[in-house]
Amino acid sequence: MRKDIKLSFLLILMLVFLAGCASVSSSGSQPGEKKFTTYIIDKNTMDYKFIINGNLYKARGTYCHGMRRGDRVVFLEGSPGGDCKTAKIKDLETGVVCHFYCDSTK
Picture 1 (cartoon, rainbow, N blue to C red):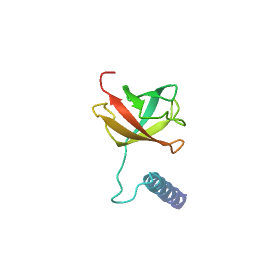
Picture 2 (picture 1 turned 180 degrees about the vertical axis):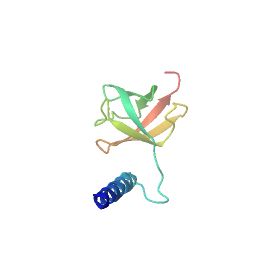
Picture 3 (picture 1 turned 60 degrees about the vertical axis):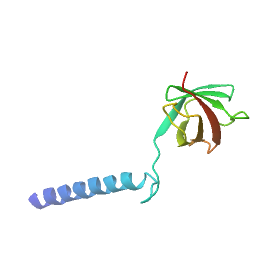
Picture 4 (picture 1 turned 60 degrees about the horizontal axis):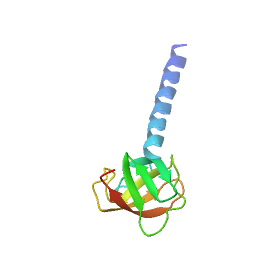
Protein backbone atom coordinates (compact mmCIF):
# COMPACT_ATOMS: atom_id res chain seq x y z
CA MET A 1 0.00 0.00 0.00
CA ARG A 2 2.78 2.46 0.93
CA LYS A 3 4.56 1.71 -2.33
CA ASP A 4 1.38 2.58 -4.29
CA ILE A 5 1.18 5.96 -2.53
CA LYS A 6 4.79 6.76 -3.41
CA LEU A 7 4.23 5.82 -7.06
CA SER A 8 1.05 7.90 -7.21
CA PHE A 9 2.87 10.87 -5.69
CA LEU A 10 5.72 10.57 -8.22
CA LEU A 11 3.22 10.31 -11.08
CA ILE A 12 1.44 13.47 -9.93
CA LEU A 13 4.75 15.33 -9.65
CA MET A 14 5.70 14.28 -13.19
CA LEU A 15 2.34 15.40 -14.56
CA VAL A 16 2.61 18.79 -12.84
CA PHE A 17 6.15 19.23 -14.16
CA LEU A 18 5.14 18.29 -17.72
CA ALA A 19 2.12 20.60 -17.62
CA GLY A 20 4.39 23.48 -16.58
CA CYS A 21 6.80 22.72 -19.41
CA ALA A 22 3.96 22.61 -21.94
CA SER A 23 2.63 25.99 -20.85
CA VAL A 24 6.07 27.58 -21.17
CA SER A 25 6.74 26.15 -24.63
CA SER A 26 3.29 27.05 -25.96
CA SER A 27 4.03 30.79 -25.73
CA GLY A 28 5.54 30.59 -29.20
CA SER A 29 8.53 32.79 -28.46
CA GLN A 30 12.06 31.66 -29.15
CA PRO A 31 15.21 32.88 -27.39
CA GLY A 32 16.11 36.34 -28.71
CA GLU A 33 12.65 36.83 -30.24
CA LYS A 34 10.89 40.08 -29.37
CA LYS A 35 7.85 39.60 -27.14
CA PHE A 36 4.75 41.74 -27.63
CA THR A 37 2.00 42.61 -25.18
CA THR A 38 -1.45 41.91 -26.57
CA TYR A 39 -4.31 44.40 -26.43
CA ILE A 40 -8.01 44.12 -27.29
CA ILE A 41 -9.84 46.28 -29.83
CA ASP A 42 -12.43 48.01 -27.66
CA LYS A 43 -14.32 49.67 -30.51
CA ASN A 44 -14.26 49.79 -34.30
CA THR A 45 -16.07 52.57 -36.16
CA MET A 46 -16.53 51.80 -39.87
CA ASP A 47 -13.06 50.18 -40.18
CA TYR A 48 -11.50 53.64 -39.83
CA LYS A 49 -11.47 54.64 -36.14
CA PHE A 50 -10.39 52.18 -33.47
CA ILE A 51 -10.25 52.39 -29.70
CA ILE A 52 -7.44 50.20 -28.39
CA ASN A 53 -6.25 50.29 -24.80
CA GLY A 54 -8.54 53.29 -24.26
CA ASN A 55 -6.85 55.34 -27.01
CA LEU A 56 -8.06 56.44 -30.45
CA TYR A 57 -6.27 55.30 -33.61
CA LYS A 58 -7.33 56.40 -37.12
CA ALA A 59 -6.48 54.32 -40.19
CA ARG A 60 -3.91 55.96 -42.46
CA GLY A 61 -4.88 56.44 -46.09
CA THR A 62 -7.32 53.57 -46.39
CA TYR A 63 -9.79 51.65 -44.29
CA CYS A 64 -8.54 48.80 -42.16
CA HIS A 65 -10.72 45.83 -43.05
CA GLY A 66 -10.42 42.61 -41.06
CA MET A 67 -9.91 44.15 -37.62
CA ARG A 68 -12.95 43.65 -35.40
CA ARG A 69 -14.05 44.61 -31.91
CA GLY A 70 -12.75 42.04 -29.43
CA ASP A 71 -9.79 40.95 -31.58
CA ARG A 72 -6.37 40.69 -29.96
CA VAL A 73 -3.70 42.99 -31.44
CA VAL A 74 -0.03 43.84 -30.93
CA PHE A 75 1.78 47.10 -31.60
CA LEU A 76 4.64 46.53 -34.03
CA GLU A 77 5.40 50.27 -34.03
CA GLY A 78 3.98 53.18 -32.07
CA SER A 79 2.56 53.23 -28.57
CA PRO A 80 -0.41 51.49 -26.94
CA GLY A 81 -0.59 54.55 -24.70
CA GLY A 82 -1.50 56.74 -27.69
CA ASP A 83 1.57 58.98 -27.32
CA CYS A 84 2.84 58.57 -30.87
CA LYS A 85 2.33 60.10 -34.32
CA THR A 86 1.83 56.81 -36.14
CA ALA A 87 1.43 53.16 -35.22
CA LYS A 88 1.65 49.83 -37.00
CA ILE A 89 -0.73 47.30 -35.45
CA LYS A 90 -1.19 43.60 -36.21
CA ASP A 91 -4.48 41.77 -35.60
CA LEU A 92 -3.60 38.36 -34.16
CA GLU A 93 -6.98 36.87 -35.11
CA THR A 94 -6.81 37.66 -38.85
CA GLY A 95 -3.12 38.48 -39.42
CA VAL A 96 -4.05 41.88 -40.87
CA VAL A 97 -1.44 44.62 -40.35
CA CYS A 98 -2.63 48.24 -40.53
CA HIS A 99 -1.02 51.65 -40.25
CA PHE A 100 -2.66 54.26 -38.04
CA TYR A 101 -2.42 57.84 -36.89
CA CYS A 102 -2.32 58.09 -33.10
CA ASP A 103 -4.75 60.53 -31.51
CA SER A 104 -3.57 61.25 -27.98
CA THR A 105 -6.33 63.84 -27.52
CA LYS A 106 -8.99 61.06 -27.52
